[in-house]
Length: 209
Image 1 (cartoon, rainbow, N blue to C red):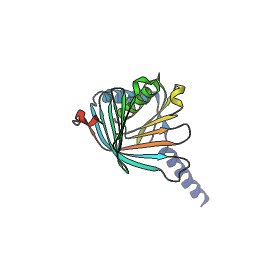
Image 2: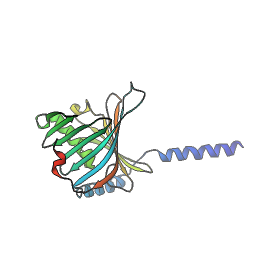
Image 3: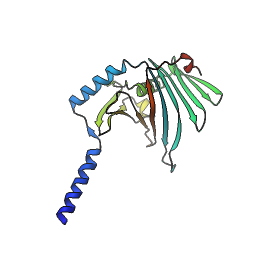
Image 4: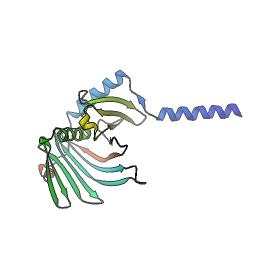
């Protein structure tokens, strides 16, 4: 009976370990990067629903918001939050346009190197085109469902805001399905994309705020 119990325990542990993340081999990394970089060049637009979860240590429950995201190559991006409030952020021509339920504001990202880098990171997170070894220390993992890239910014200015970005690519897909932005404090924001459409027609007016 003890031997049987021990065998079951070993089998359970093995299954748990298998479900966890494993480091990708050098050949797997090269193949993965090649596929993603090649396919990302074919993506002109992305239209998707999203659900965002904000985790803060002092709150017992995550803050959940949702809406739609529009991306148009090379760098037009619109986050439209529709629940539980209406709020949109448009990245366009090195500027960030914010519309908070009718109250509009504009930030010149081009005048700030830090904001410019953060803008580039956000666009790269959506498109999956973030394999820049000069900007990030990058680690590659996989589990049974995802290829996972973990990017740590190298510059101290960015490290103040972002500790690590985790990008989740489904095994049978070439676009990001989840993004996790980890802050130095331990708080994080997780964004899950749903009902994604690639290369659908998106009018430029969508990026007017």
